[in-house]
Length: 510
View (spheres, helix red, strand yellow):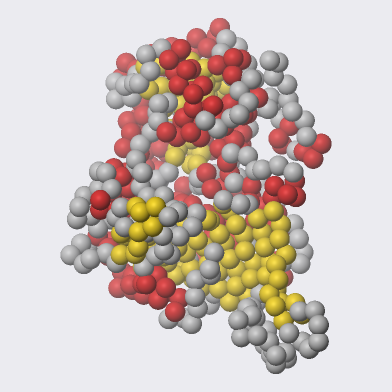
């Protein structure tokens, strides 16, 4: 099969038509779930689309596979799980290599260096290098130190680039995030560091920027004068699956809030950037984090709630409690649900609460951003039904369906003036005749072209941790206090409902 670029007339003149420079992509943790389920399918798609060419090589680094063929067979199996058409596999497999290595072993990096130099010298890969840390966080320090020690962190010459992608979590709290940033900063410059958050690669997340700043009708009402409050939900029906060892040390707050959900909040709350350039966009996002009032230690119970799932029903099947999951301590105090009430203390958002919630084993799999507008100052329609939502609601759904809906009141046909809420709906797949691609496709494409717009920056990461640092301290100091429970298949503990009920509000039904 000959690989040619699939041209879409809708994309004429866009960045998607570019081809990346000849490069060597090195993936540490090549046998892990992230590589098999996300990275390799994304790289395969980029190759089939023509973005990655035969002058780019992909090196998997792991202790699992014995040679190139074993690695290629494992990756072929992984790609077949997500791709119905693998006609480009034979050509793609030729750019895959593997090095069996222990990342704790000094000699492994010398072997890696020799392989990279060989590919650049004899295979036409140029001198561009991308290192991807698809490993557990505890391996970051060792890999980063050794990349520096073996002179792999600096570009080969002025005409080439070297970059590194780091997966979340970026630390466990503010102190550890600062320590990690210092570690990376001693080996790589900030412009080389790409802190990846796959939520930002989703089309609807990026569409937030287009929706806000590409349409003149929304920006004038995107403020405290018209918006009553904002709700952000990231709910999963699954449990911890095979991630219990990680989850026991992280919990819902660390796993989801200072990265995924804060990034969504920043896109909703940020000021209009002067231009759509990486540092300018990220400057505005960081300003949001700096404007959020940190939750004080003594006020954690007032602004934060947590919970842990017990047994219940998901899709008509009984599922176990968290403490009965494999590799979970029977007396675990780890939260599988968290909710926060936050305020962005600036001119635009003063007094507007932003409620955030995330959890596992919840009633529905959905990531949703909802803006509840203020009620009309005077309702003139006396026959308005009691169950009609008199507030307008704008909902942006990130997953499973990527859509934007606006709920407003309209007159029911017939005599009288009876109103009913109706919905205007934008659906990504219906509007463009295609489903959104893998988020990792977009983010890998951006990294290979040197675009950091959708990647997190050091000051933003640290500012986000600072907002919730005392929440960790308070919960860790309350180990003698039972974590509130919620049944699997529900929307979380009553403590989360009370965050809103105290303000006379309720979570939106999703």
